[in-house]
Length: 470
Image (cartoon, rainbow, N blue to C red):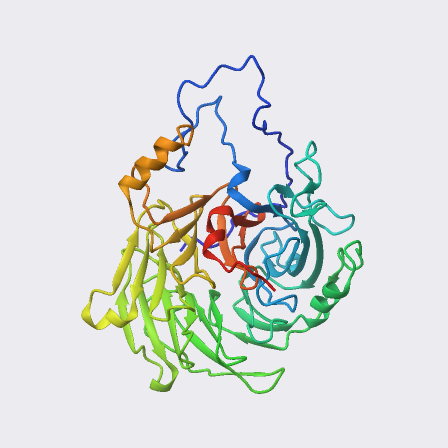
């Protein structure tokens, strides 16, 4: 149930210099053993040791932060192209803050443009934007092979009373967003004016970035307690479910373009807090829920307020779930014990629905999501400060590994016990909370943590994705 960022602080980023390859002092002692992969929670660092990131592992890697940490965010669909692969990229994001005072919170509407490839750099601070950003690449040129200059951050803020536990953008109308607050209110907002402003503004425009706008939500509903679970239907525009810490789930139906009716009779069945909700990608009336009671339930709105089926999913709290949009029979779940599982829902009646179970992470799973472009690929974040990417089709091939190792003697030695399905490990963020794949930019993932956001495009998943973009 690890969810909130305790004692939030307005982060101050420290400049650190990391030696580049070949820049080490000639007086430094030579390496006595091959470089190796460092595993959080398994390996320890000596006082004179430091971790080094290999930039060649990424097609693109950037970081930014907007002041207060954000527990949740969502990527906003845009009109720049359904599938695009050419750098530089532009992304739109909505996020919710975790400020020290209820009145200091806001919905952040973010545009990051000029996202170049093949190197990491921190988005520079803009004057008057209320964020705290410095470049950590003073000695590097801003030029690279996939664009020039640093990424540009533009920001608009809408006042929100209380911390935002979760925020979601409606797939069919991305300017409509729902927020789950620690005040027990779920609210629906129209952010079109702010998104349109950012879309039309020039990159050097700074108007409104330090100003917090006050506007009323389109609709709001108060639960008996706060919550974290919320999801828009991918099939019925405006249909929404929200679940709270008192185990109740409520259905929202759109009454018009700007109004919603909430069924005051909740779905009941869980014995503890509802942590996550996911609509079926193929059945408009079906959704799944995950709970602290260690179970996952499947609901059908046509069958009343009781679960159609429920099953024990983990030996600890079920924190997050993700329903595969490309293979609708597959449901992924992440637990408080660090494990995550994949189930084939067609096999539930037989009692052997688990097709994969991983215990690589040793701390709670905080986010899980299937790739929108590869049905066998998913990404996971954990409280162990790791973001991992997995391909379920991969299998161990000892002969191929031996041949590869013989050809690349200088290759970093990987631990023998790494799962063959583990495709990529991303580190460098503290207290990771949520990740999302970008549906319109294949291979791009955005993640949020207590120290800000990362935008990354791992190099080794490029070949699995569409070659041509819009």
